[in-house]
Image (tube, rainbow, N blue to C red; front, side):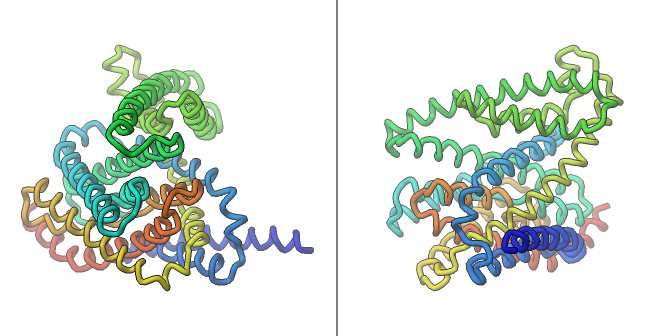
Length: 412
């Protein structure tokens, strides 16, 4: 009877999460208020509060869910890159990403290491988890409501770039920590050389794999289940590159980007484009990719609630840490926008686009699984930062949107 109840319970919770995710997405598109908050709260209720799901049961499966979600994030991010946007908005979005992420990471590292007394690695991990991400699930949709194509392309590109940058930095830091590389000058020299090698391997294999798959698309474009085959191919790339100590995340990112921009690459390489066939399959893949990312995202934020350490809410240090992180993010965002955006009228719109989402949630879960130093605090602070930044973006955008819609209509 207990096993019967257990699978019924899991089915009911899964069905509930899917419906919450579905209707939460509708609610978000009408109000701008993210479903992330509801999913995390449900996880907290069924995890640490009611203890329906014990932490000891969740931790063993967390790395598998995290790595799968990470692979799908990178594929989706890769397929979101458009070379025309990189050309037109790359300078502004790239500059803002580097300043926002770089300044956030630097300040978090320095303040938590020298003011709060965290170790070098724990300060670095916290910095690379929450250091300047803007979620691709929320920022582009809100930006689209402004009806300004340049603004939309700019912040969408930034959201993709900062997620990639944080994942790369965190992953290399994690590998260095697991290999017991000392966090000093000599250790950093070894990390940098390792990073260059892993990046090179990941990008080259991802590029070659994409060209091979485009040829595969020409031959089997009419077959059913083509998307499932693409997912299998993506996971095979991820596993193979990980096995040979390359950057698996960059290989999948490169694969998605080349697949999305296949016509550009094939023209450069002098290959036959078969544009109609390839476009049909790429759009098909992209549509189903959104569906699987939705499912993983929905379940993952529920998982984040399950592993929330509610006892940290009783610790005054948590609120001191949280205030410091929020202040750093707001200051870094302000500086990045002031430097990268010349249009003074639109600066506030860029400034409030700081809601965080899936990337920091996945990275924090990996920190917890690998028992990284201060991982309990990292998980708790990440969950709270996700909640607060989403609330700040949503409430601020609600106040700004009417003003900017008026401004845009006057400009046009």
